[in-house]
Structures are given as structure tokens and as C-alpha cells.
Image (cartoon, rainbow, N blue to C red; front, top):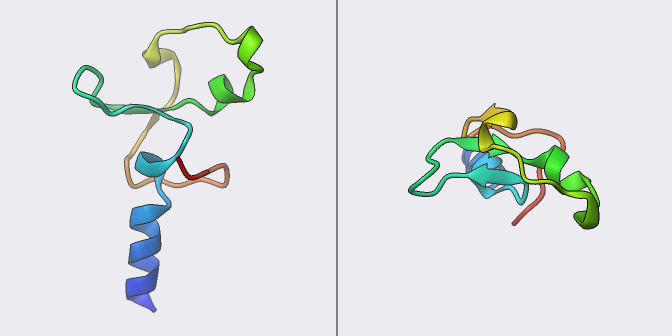
Length: 67
């Protein structure tokens, strides 16, 4: 049971979420881009990555969605 939970946490977390921003060589920290992706594509405006909340790679929330 614990192993199943650990495997799920490793899979269903911010680092595997479709809304995560950053996490590459130029922006190592992860940011939640949920508000950006909820805006219709035609209305999206580019903001600095720092304007989005920082998240931990292992964090998970109710809005998690697979990449």
C-alpha cells in the first residue's frame, strides 16, 4: 500500500503536470502556470516566470493534469 502511494506521488506531482513552467537549464525552479493555461490562447500574455507561484517538484494539487 505504501509503495503504491509513493509511486503515485512520484508520478502525479508538479514535475509531471501539464501546467508546470520552468524546470529547464535556464529556469531550474518550477512555477505553476495554471492561471496562464486557463486563459484562452488568444488572450494569453507573456509574463515573467517569477510572476507565477513557485512549486516543489514533489508537490501536488487538485488541478494536477498529466502532460
